[in-house]
Amino acid sequence: MKKVITWCIGIVLVVLLIISIGGSFYMLDFSLAPENNKTDIDSCYREQFTNYPETRPWIDSLRSVNALKDTFITMPTGERHHALYVRNGSNKTALIIHGWRDCSIEFLYLGRLYERELGYNIVMPDLHAHGKSEGDMIQMGWLDRKDALQWLSVFQTDTMVVHGVSMGAATTMMLSGEKLPKPIKEIRFVEDCGYTSAWDEFAAQLKEQFGLPEFPLMYSTSLLCKIRNGWSFGEASAIDQIRKCKYPMLFIHGGSDTFVPTEMVNRLYEAKPGKKDMWIAEGAEHAESYLRHREEYVEHVKRFVKCME
Image (cartoon, rainbow, N blue to C red; front, side, top):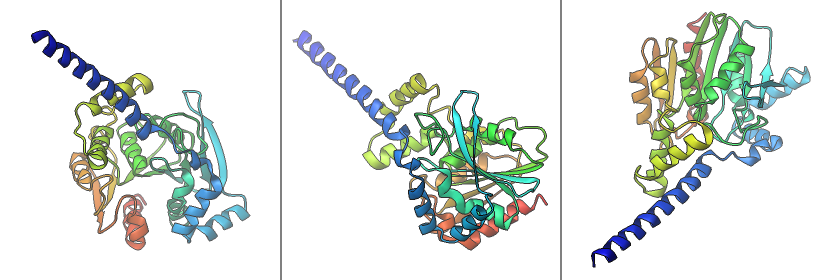
């Protein structure tokens, strides 16, 4: 009888192991596989003009003088990455970073804010495995922070702002804890609805979408990510990085955000030392603060950025 029980327990453990391994591969691909249609440029522009019609005449005016340019740089990894670039002769530049499975085109509304209303040059990269940039798996901001640092170095000016939304906000915060190029005299960071860490975000979605606890799937998937991609969910931490941040930061979050739960911004704000400000956009869901509250959003960003002038 004892042998039968042991044999049954062994079978159950093997089955659970197989389920865990299979679930880990599924979860990793579900979370980190890129969106193929983000290379459909026409579709991205149609979506931009539908949601933010004010960008169309601005983009048309840039195109009329050949000012909206595609630019490429080669990262230290050897991958070729793409960005949209507008230079208007200013000594101020905004690096604008898009979200998960998005591309630079979908955030041209922020490009308009910085270029047209604030007089900044703009650099809008496609992150690794997004848009026209090479790569096969999404990096959740962690390795993207190194790519963002390359864009800063190539296009550095006296004054700079890094503004990211969602995963781009996580990238922004992760970058803020790094050593930045010395020639930059003044830099500020704006994070819009970023998560505390990849672990926290995936754990929240695992519970929200599938009703599953962290153990064992989060642990096995994080280990698989470390083996395949060189980083784990735990080390991809925005909150740890901003604890090292020496620069001013504006925190923006939708008051009704459930995809990146609003409570995360409170923990991030408390963890950030030094100069900081926060605005909660009432009733806005994930990455909708600008869409739902255009005037307030612009006012908060302008006030925060103009403190450098």
